[in-house]
Structures are given as C-alpha cells and as structure tokens.
Length: 213
Length: 213
DNA sequence: ACCTGAACACCGTTCAAGT
DNA sequence: ACCTGAACACCGTTCAAGT
Image 1 (cartoon, rainbow over the protein chains, first blue to last red):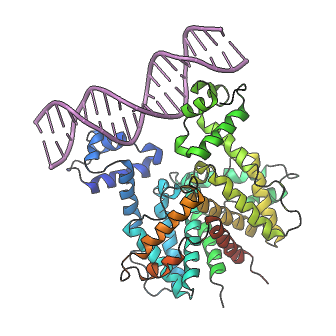
Image 2 (cartoon, chains in turn purple, blue, red, brown):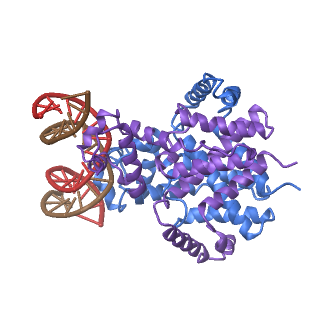
Image 3 (tube, chains in turn orange, blue, cyan, yellow):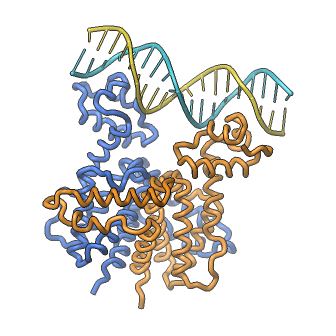
C-alpha cells in the first residue's frame, strides 16, 4: 500500500495500523511485509528484531500521554487524565500491558509519565516515599484495567455492549443457592463503559491515597 | 519422567511445573511431550488444543484462592487475603493475567472468587451496585500488579532485589533538571517486595471504597 | 482405545545473492 | 546501500498408521 521508501516511521505507522485492525495475533513480520509492499525481511534493515520494533511502537504510543496537559487544573484532574491516556495507549498495544515491559529500562516517554505522576502526588502534599508508593499503585490499576479490557478492544462499541450483556446473563443464571451475591448483583456487573469503571476505581484509589481534608 | 498412564491431571501437573521452571515461553507442546515421556501429539487425546489445556491449568491454580478462608476475620482481611492469593495464582500463569481471559465465560472456581469478593463488600455495607464496582476495581488492581510483576517472577528473590536496585539506579542517574521528582524519589521506587507494594495499594483502594467511619 | 510419527501450514530470523 | 528470496529452526495441529 504505502509506496514511499522504507523508513522507521513508516514501519511503525503500519505496525500500529495492523495491530489496531487485526489485533496482536494478526500482526506478523510477514503480514507487515505485505502491508509495506516489501519482502518481509526488509524490515530487518531498520530494526534488529521484532522486539525492537514493538519497543518503537510503544514509544510512539506513550508519547501522547503527557503532551498538552491542562496547566492549572490541579493535581487530581491531571492524574486522572494521564492515567486515562496511558490506559488508552496500552489498549492499543496489548503486548505492553501484558507483561515483560514496565519497570525500567524504560524509554524517554516512559520517564516523562513517571515524572508527571510523581509531580502530581507531590503537589497533593505527599512525601517522596508516599509519592513513590502512590505511583506504583496507580500504574498497577491502570495496567490491570487495560489488560482486562484488551481482549474486547478490537470489537465495535455495539459488539462490546452485547458482550457485557451476555456476561451479565451468565451471572444472572447461576444457581442462587450457591452464588447468591453474584446473582443479586448481576444486573450491576460490567455496567457502563470500561473507561467509566476504570475512572471510578481510580477515583476511589486516589481517595484512599490522599484523603480529603 | 512421570511414567504413569497419561491423565488430564498428570498433564496439568506437568504443565504447571514447566511454566514455573522455564516461564511461559519455555512451555511448548513439544517440551510438554518430552517431560511426559510421550509423543508431543499424545496430549491431543485429552485436550482439544493448547487453549483448553491452559484453561484447565488456570482452573487448577484459581481453585486455591477461596479455600480455607478465616471464618470470622471480618470483610477486610478476607478481601486482602483473597486478592493476595489471586495475585499469586496469576503470577504462576502469566497468560492468565495477561489478557484474553477474565470476564465470563468463566469456570467454577472463578465464580467462587467473584461470589466471595462480592459477599465481603456487602458485609462491609455496600449496596449491590457499589459492590459490583468495588469488585471490578480490586480485580483490575490485582491483575495489573500480577502483570507487572510476572516478568520478574521466575527470578530468585536475590536476583529480583538486584533488579529493583538496578532500576532505582536508572532513576537516580537521570538528568535532575528534566526529571527532578523522579531523581528525588528514586531511592523510594520499587522499595520492599512486590507483594508488599500490592497490599499497600489494595489497602488504599479499600480505604477509598469503604471510608472508615 | 490410545499412542506414534510423518506431514502441513505457519512463525521469526539469517545470509548469500542480487540491484 | 538497500532489498530479495531461499533456507533454517522452530511452532501448533492433523491424520493415517500402528499396537
């Protein structure tokens, strides 16, 4: 398709598009070669291996997380915004949310995320040690939310709603003698969007980290 | 090694052992066949495919999460214990924490986890809708903590500590002009064990979900 | 009834050969 | 300097053949 000379940027662009359209498992070096209109092995001129390519992809995706943040919104809205963007970026590359990465050795954009979040917690009045713990806490929640939602991310919002509906039905039809609470709460499970549930969880976590006066 | 006739239980046992020793990527149907002393394809007599085998593995691992819980410890210690056990089980099968699964269609042991957690939140005084949201919140945090820690899980505790030390050093040697908060908090990052950090985050989340009176 | 082993359709990656 | 394409060492899985 894309007919220009092969560059790292072109390759990263195409990789992101393939993963968005076909999911992680649909992306292979051969499918990438076909989308680029080159031999599959031509990519190895620009990236040492598949892992380095995916690292470049994550660098690109995470680069959007800390740009153009509202300047004077206060620590809490900024924290929520950064975490929502991070979750969204992770959804676009399940391999990232999944494991392996996270934790240094990181890339420049990941340092920017760490710095931004730590700064918000310091602005909220936390000491350095408490800010570090708070940072680990929100990262764990964000990664988990993305990992759970990743499987449904390639679905349309309509299909996603149907899937949630189906899951509620599964809970609703369990044996009420054995699973009374699950049956009772079944209508409330998987309610709203995954992003809304994530924000709710994040707000509760922030309430616990920085109790309001 | 194991010389008995092939059964589903034997196969699941051996799979868990291989994943524990060599990690997820070290487990292949061929390595499984070798460990069982059979042809690699013999397993297909007992499991439709690799996915069904891994589902049986997760069923086995998650089966330990809700057994023998302290009867009268109160909702909060029980919640923490269930989440810690769940996290530990997920660490033993990174594929589970990773994605794809979670969310129905689930297996019996997963329903037991859902029921137990919902029950604790009801005991804590939450309405059904609030209990469902609380359930989603703690699951997200638990899965995320396991996913982040999965990469280091096959290391010895000594190697793990060294890794954390190395990561702190990375943060400490960043440019303090660009990353002042990260450099300042570097000594506090990745402090203690991953389990301790997880419990800290979980306690904060529970504080936010059920404010103390 | 259960296991074997050749075979198939894939992977990521290497490397000599082309232009 | 960059790309090609055959080839290698793997995968998961199928299926006819063995016992």
